[in-house]
Image (cartoon, rainbow, N blue to C red; front, side):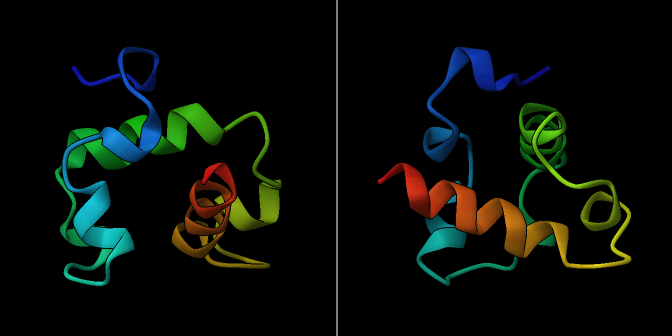
Length: 68
């Protein structure tokens, strides 16, 4: 199991390619997607997490780009 605690979230498998626009968020390895959701679950608004008031992948991308 991949956890963000083991990595800087930008170093998870596939994240660089996603942020560079080479692949779609949902083309990331499932372990990476799960780790990102788990890592940001305490911060992400409920409506975004459920894709009702926003897109979870866009929200996570904004957070990751803010780390730079």
